Image: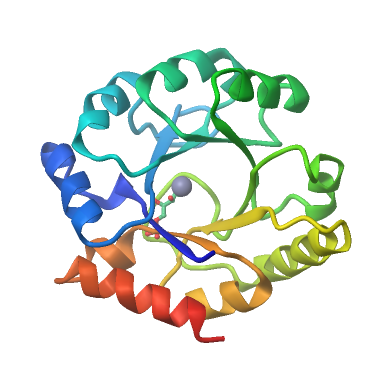
Length: 219
Ligand code: DX5
Ligand code: ZN
């Protein structure tokens, strides 16, 4: 199922709650929240207390993208803050199975992410273990970067491998997703699309989300 997840990294942080309500009303399927620790990525965003304060603004799922060196140390904090999906990186320092188990122990959905330079077959041992894979289509850390087309092969290889095993696990893409690039990512086999600047730069967020959804479906 195609889902559009606005990345709140591009919103006006002085009106964070209202911006979430605006995305909810605009038809977002999930709210994508980018957590950066200034160590795993060269940028700092916001953490669990901010997410907790935003939780009352919508009933839509919180898709929390943890760009942390030690995600396992913070699973409880983000679970208590109201996350629904917790995505962490294979390249981080936390053991994958233990982190997945910790996420599931709070009743949340675990998702595993790789950066653009990490080969997709490093994810293959975890097929069937997580509810979603995130293939980064830019280097993580900042919004507004250009989509890296060379990451698409990873999406199609992962989709093919999942299909071979009879799994319909979600594949999310994140970074540089626009009206042009979303159809390529969808054709490659992604079904969840994070988009920050394309949605927040648009004058009508509802139309932007509709247009992205249509472009993703029209392959
Ligand atoms: C980057 C973040 C993305 C980013 C996407 O590290 O994970 O979610 O905000 O923004 P755009 O769509 O502008 O590339
Ligand atoms: Zn993200």
